[in-house]
Length: 508
View 1: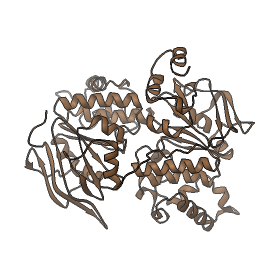
View 2 (view 1 turned 135 degrees about the horizontal axis):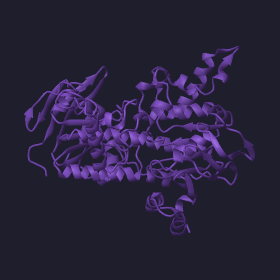
View 3 (view 1 turned 90 degrees about the vertical axis):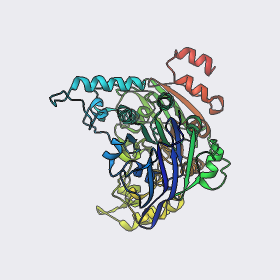
View 4 (view 1 turned 180 degrees about the vertical axis):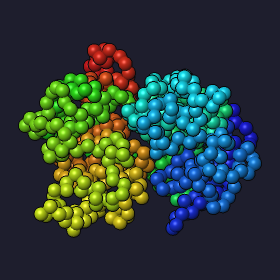
């Protein structure tokens, strides 16, 4: 149910940083019982708005109204008292604590004598997870969970607050299709209870399905406001980038018949079971499946991150032994990890130091790094991959997600890798940066390099792959041509059904 008076409202709110006007007289109305999409490319001002509503920072001018009354959200505690819960894109999980402790961190149930009630912590956190239709043991240590599972714990923290308004910043970036649908069902239930939800996502197909109204920002200003924006992907893209993008997935088919990688019966203690497939020169081989299906574990097995207990890897017709990551790197195999922030980048380095990190031996003379060679080699890659020129002077933490992702890929081009495993390469980056990554994939395959693409975005996987290997329970069920597979096939193939029936019904 919505009301005439917004639950929260921004009126001409502005915020400037040195040299940047992040929010320029932004107006937005957030209604109770409504899911409101906040959209725009990276750097458009979304994060500034979220931080202002969350009490992380104060606006320079303008007013914030709560139920029509001006308020000041002085800090995150004030936001919490006003019924605002925020799930930031950057996790705030404490990895050494349990799932239950993380869900109620800062609001732990206590007895009337002030003693922590551990039984209630776990019972209440189990109730929250059950409400979300998420099956995680509340005693599990958060640091042992996958990225997607940690994301679900972050969302559970907001649900446990019973907040009147929840801000979700890229809530599905690390989730698979099944988890996304369960989250959306939960959001619809919360909307029916009168909760206001501010939903920020670069997955525009999701936005089209779930939100009731949208506000679109460009260069810090509102370019499309609530009530006047059609919630259709083409209209959203047009407003976000200031022009029409006719081709969201500019796929080139560069696959040849030459087999460059053959995987035979791979098994690991991490759950990879009898995995076999071939990868061809210039091919994009997609790995499809739900969160936890074993896609990332297959990538880690090939890259030497997880020890093989059975099977072998044949590279260009020659059996190779890969026990560690360095063995894979020497054989020209690269991994762009799912979580670039924690596993892929050195945030206190500029682009040059990140790009050369896997190939320092190429730069050494008598045991000393030749920084001149490093600068020249990386400068060429920065230019060729159209990475922001700021990357030459600034550390990577100041760069956008799209530029950060291209820097990780540039590392493996500097290392002369021929086989690149891209695990969720467009996770958390905007539509313009996604298209840049797709064009880079075309550039790589055109040059004869081969790609293994892991993506929870089914549209992306279908559009950019030449073939798709469907992964379930650590095994590959079948590897049809991408044109033979539909979105519905991927959803059904990922479900817990009999494998023989799966092959017969879908890929016969």
